[in-house]
Length: 409
Image (cartoon, rainbow, N blue to C red):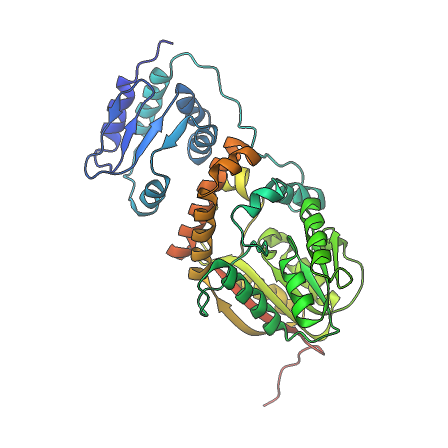
């Protein structure tokens, strides 16, 4: 009611005279691309403008997208545009004109509520309770949803294609075996799997290498599936899955530790405590394999409000140097480091294609808001690895048998 989109169209033209995309408004009017045939952004309702005016920037745009009042006709083209297009500098006066034009275009609209799928965490960052809530927001969606795009082993981390694997299934098996090889597992050993997910590593290590594995996760649905899969594989007596935070592990000793996709959730303020915990649980001379995502830059490390609220609450990949520094302060010696950024990019491309092949089933399982989040997240994460914003590293470390002393020349 009382809306007029003409000022908004003019403000967009003035602020972005060169734009490789189209804008289509809810009243059927358009702002055409200045060149090329780029994606069309569909502003389906005045509520989209209201979201952006309420929370200018990424969060407001994200809320509009999640609720479906902002859409795009080609999501892959839009992601390439975001990555490649150099947005023009918009001065304060142009921004004010855009805001005023948005108010005029919006007309009389109730202030929109936050989407139901948005999570706003309370309490101290990386406290036990807050970490549990953050992890469960991501994982406790529906086990059946993850089955739509993961391989049958339910491995939710980087697959390794660069060693000859042709399919996602082969690449995940390659990764699991690579971790076992780097840990030098032998029958009879006791292994800790920190952040065990649906049990893929624990099951592989127990069935292929004769070890016993304790896996921990904060997700009860994950733990239930991991236990069922271990029983079905005939190794239920070798695999124990616990629902607990790593800080709740009792004093016990392991011959080897795998930390796969866990370090991203620890946080810089807890990384030293995490490293000390690993050292406390590992026998002297034992091996640790840390597999995790890391920021490449030390300056450009903002995952953004969208990821914080909708995808990975409180997750904060650390630079490799910070991770290795904490491990070395705890008494570990770094023996080998390897990175797999393009392997993860291909993994994410495989997951994206598989999810897109099952959109109807995914929609029924998790609803439209979360499905939109996941389709965007998988594509954005892939671009991060392709452009060098993030990488994924495997670091093999050994716990020093005795405190290290400087050599005497």
